[in-house]
Image (tube, rainbow, N blue to C red; front, side, top):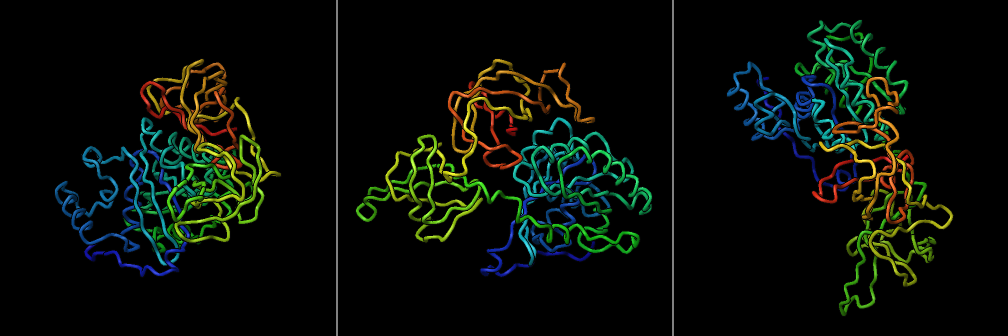
Length: 431
């Protein structure tokens, strides 16, 4: 690796600014090569700057490695570099002429499952790595199940370290068959399989000459061309109000706007809308961003909406279409990924955040815990502790306006917070 692949600036024209953004996460077991894969992806696509490359080379030399260790690009914590593992979620941004990307490099250790959940929560696509020598292991199944639970619609299974099994087609086919058997129980519609060597660069950015039996696309081409246009819900219109804008200045004396992020559907000036929970209706007067008025707004745009009528609307309320309303209720059933050492307390009281609304809740019932390996429900084991996944029933102090997580990731997700420590203890997906 004598030649330096230095980042080439892409002209910031309108075409570049309007390119698609793909968020993806890497997951897998320990030492499967997640950080090395990202380093290779950035290096071969010329997305590493010169000073970054010099730092990586110096760190590699200091550690006594015979090659430039590209995993150091994302493993930034001292503990990560000392142990050669990923502990926290590392985010990296890069772009090609076709698309912009945000990568979340997540840890492989079982005790850092909560970090994987955090990194995957906003992803369009998940890359799950498998060591070609070890095949599908518990963490492979765990991370694939979490990707399914989080409604990530695209999954790429990268069989890494093919150089250590002599680029064997039989090894790749066996691992693919094992994963296909497990993934048949998951709700992921688009699964792709790519044999790679992150260390050598096979099938990451450039097509491998050592695996001529593989006729599929490289990883970068897959990331550049996967269709994410249908990932957002553009049918059910949802606009949680985050802030009411009242400048009360001479120039904008009577201005009243509702700022927030579109959580679903499409809003246009002239559309009839209903404010929840009041049920009052009005029409959209304007949709604005800074001083610009837009013809429409859709997820996930952040905009300010003004209405033709003065309605009492505050933070936590939601604008919807009168003929397409969300569920409204206080008894919420959800799958939860538990993120705290202290387990779920049945009859325990917590704070929840749902869209822009904050309320108190009580855990009415713990239904069951999920066995990650078999996906079976363990109804006799209701101890949901750190990194466990289970199903619970909450009763909230105020009605929530929600959809199922499967229908809308924005209005179907809940964050559970400890009322005494203010720690985020759980991430919930409404059923």
